[in-house]
Length: 152
Image (cartoon, rainbow, N blue to C red):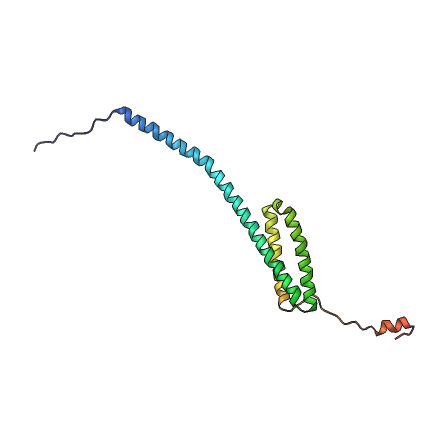
């Protein structure tokens, strides 16, 4: 059995060294790119999340105002008055949002959103023809008799 001679390509050592150095600098450049890009990307994502939260707040707010307006027009007397009071407070809150809404923090937006959800529950309860207040009849005869000078 004859042994076959092993043949290999003759590489210069300089090519391998240059390739290793280039690979090292490419890895360092990629790490520096990630070190700058990742915080920027996370900041952009948090900004979009804040904008989405504000948009949800505005949509909830607008739907609640229209629901309160419909309730104030269509419900019977005590419930319609309560819906009108809620609508008036929502209108005041609209003016506040127009002036100061862009300066609200995400925590304030979240707190306001939860308040609006509670108010939506109150309005839906009014929509079932259930008022939180009730008319109480007042018997006026004892007062009229007292004003006339008679005791009951």
